Image 1 (cartoon, rainbow, N blue to C red):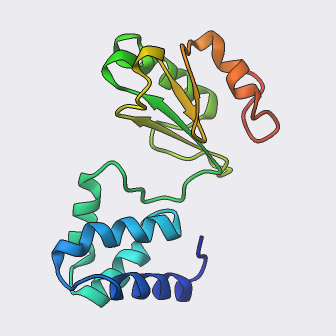
Image 2 (image 1 turned 90 degrees about the horizontal axis):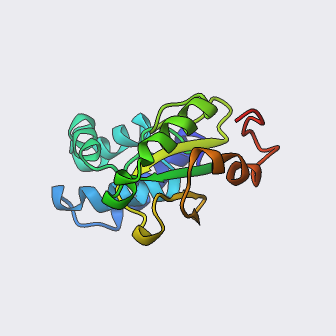
Image 3 (image 1 turned 120 degrees about the horizontal axis):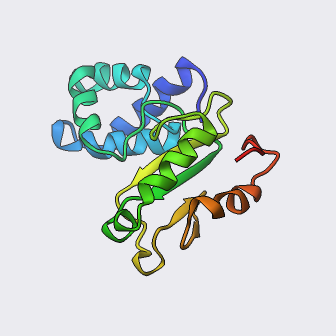
Length: 164
């Protein structure tokens, strides 16, 4: 991830230069910027405005329509709770609530120490295994509140509270 204004400006400049001018390139540009920088910062949106003429507020409006875009740095580890139909019916919202309480963040937020981001996703594609949770892409099946300590135990010492 880039850490300075100069880095952000050069990343945005490089990405914008590779795409045709105009609004039709905005989503691919936003996707590439997020891939390179980890999220869409206000600074990156201002750079888009300077280089494309698309206002920062318009770019932000487009990005907020899609759940794929983040506006804060992601955590070191990403915890995803599936909210697809099969998982929802099997009360995945209870899993998300428990993780939210344990980590001290709401869904869509990152812990203060930057270790964990908690996300709810539309579907992880493991419907027969519902409800499912993925941590850094590793899928856990048939998750219940009682199984969370063992799942999170794999990440013990990396910021997950021991008192789940």
